[in-house]
Image (tube, rainbow, N blue to C red; front, side, top):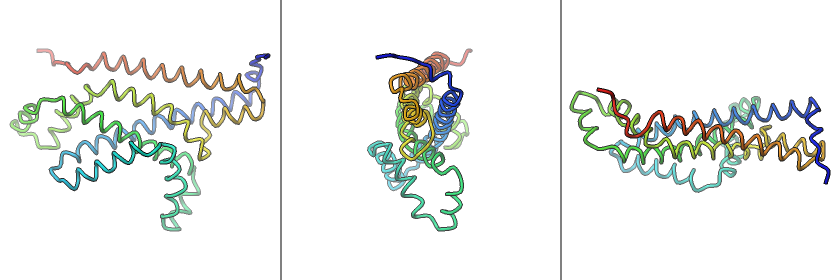
Length: 233
């Protein structure tokens, strides 16, 4: 078998690879930020002493953890527009619908995992710290924001990073609804050039390099913010 990377001399191929990589990164960063924000909100809501509220949070988490991510993406893309009022549906379809729905689906999916990681971190915190925060005049929300979550995030850094790497790889699932991310562009280039091995090798290396960069950044973050951090006296 002759292996040739001559396809890289084609400006159109390079443009497609660059575009796909950029969209993959946009999906990843957007879903990471959105998912973490939702996870923080869920962590706060779950502290409400209500069985109904906690049951709804559990139902949300179980759905997103047990239904395949690709199915969740298709539910948002094919299903959600059908239940929207017609004026809103028309307005939604005028924009970049594929990217938007993929971003929402990935954000909500990863938020369930981020929430579980944060909850594990919250459980690792001694309850007396919350009591101490309340005793100095902090409200429940203030104690959560200033005392509980900062420490919980430190404990949760390793699993959060692992989940973020999985999230980066899951962006490739967006191709099923036509999002022109890296995997979509790789397949499109393969259909044009018929250089299957070469283009998929290039795509593999890009995913590998980006995943390693995320892992390295996560390791640096874990070293900078260890769970046993103590304020200098």
